[in-house]
Length: 179
Image (cartoon, rainbow, N blue to C red; front, side, top):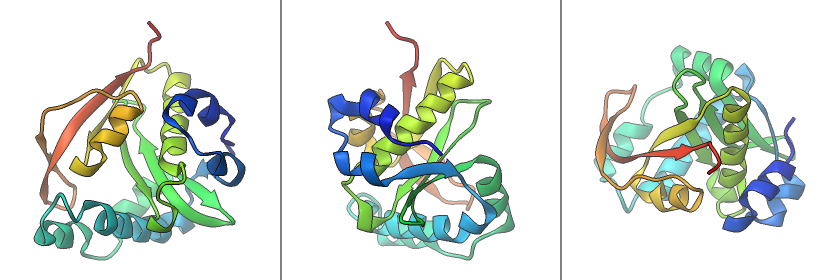
C-alpha cells in the first residue's frame, strides 16, 4: 500500500492536509470494491456537480446498476483510497494513453486531501511507467482543483461517457518532465 509521504512532498505547495497523511492508504482495487466505488462515484457526482450540470444530466449520469464492464474495469485499472477499512476514494490510469479517470471522493471526506493524494499516487505510477504526460477530462466543477495541482486546460469540450451521455468537460494535461 502507498502511504501519503509522496503526496505530502509533491503537493505540499497546494496545501495537502496532514489528516490525509495520517489516515488514508491507497491500494489496487479488488472486485469486492466495485460496488463501493460505484456508490461513492454517484454520491460524489450528485454532491459536487449539481451547480454545473442539469438535473437531467445528473440523473442520466448516475442511473442504472453496476455493470460487468465496470467491475472488470475496476479490477484491471482502479485504485482505491481507504480509511478505517472503508473505500472513500477512487482513481484510475491508462498506462497506454496517460489518461486519468474515475477520480471520485466520498462526500463525507470532501476537503480532506483524498483527491490530492490519489492524484499524486497516480502521477507517481505514471512516472514509474515512463510516461511524460498525464491527461484527463475534468468535470466543470473540478477544473480549478486540477489547475491547482499543475494541470493546464481552459477550453470546454464534450465528454462522451461509456453510459452514452454527453457532458461538458475541460480536457487537461500535465507534463511530468521537470523543467
